[in-house]
Image 1 (tube, rainbow, N blue to C red):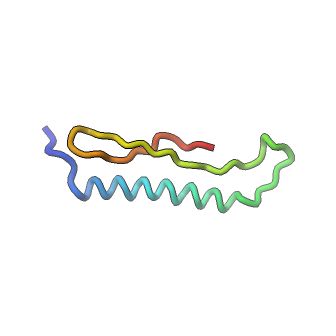
Image 2: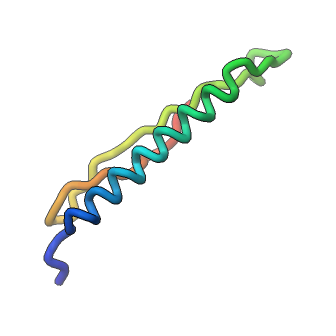
Length: 68
């Protein structure tokens, strides 16, 4: 049986979640000036949605989805 998550496991998962957030921000900034002929074709900002997960020993963060 696993004794739980180490400090490095927890911080690694937090850094991975932060990377998803920064990539979404970079994508939003890169596409902010995109022009479209229709409203449906217009770029919509990405918003990462995170969820907390408890695996019995520690709570961690997962990316639930990328919302627009």
